[in-house]
Image (cartoon, rainbow, N blue to C red; front, side, top):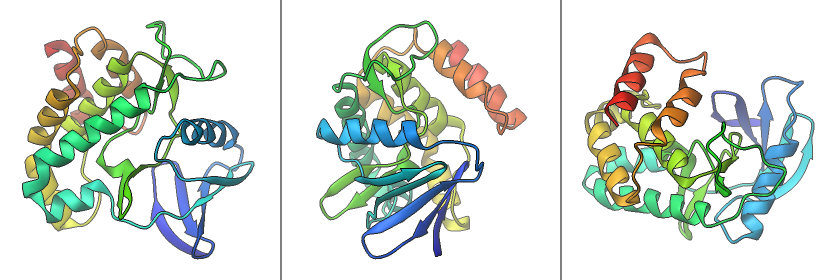
Amino acid sequence: MRLLGVGRDADVFALDGARVLRRYRDPQRSAEREARVMAHARAAGLPVPEVFDVDGADLVLERIEGPTMTWALARRPWTLAAQARVLAGLHRAVHEVPAPDWLPGVGDVGGTELLHLDLHPENVLLTAGGPVVIDWTNAARGPAEVDVADAWLVMSVGSVPGGRLQAAVVGAAQGTFARLFRRAAGLDLAAALPAAAARRLADRNLGDRERAAIRRLANRG
């Protein structure tokens, strides 16, 4: 199998022209919940890859052709505002879908909307038919504000993946894009930021700089 992509927790391999295998590196981790939430989101009309099969840590998915939004921003930085609106629109579409009862909630903040909780440019593929949302590992139930706050924090402080050119171009505009996205989302995030920040700070992969930046942004609101 040919390796197509490497994520924080899983790798993606080409199976054929129509399917990919997404495999968690931890063989004890089950992809069942991710498969169920993707099927739920797709049935509700969201642009999500079709799930063909799930077996333990392996998830067989529809192969989606197209670059990430991050890639597009690096090569067409003049589209920054337009892409921020696209991302905000995807968030709204996700949050209009009621979360299934079996999906866990985010802390004790309530809410019944479907949340992606990792919906940033690296998890949006831009295809000829429109944007497609991938990587539903963190999906949960809760208020839309937590999802938007999570994305805003990630885009404000996270390191940019990819080569030197992509990291330099996108990194230079990172703060601007995050602000444009937050404005386009049009939600008051003040009450949601503590819960979103707590989730991110629980990630053991975060460096000291990112932790400090998240705390600073969460306190500033």
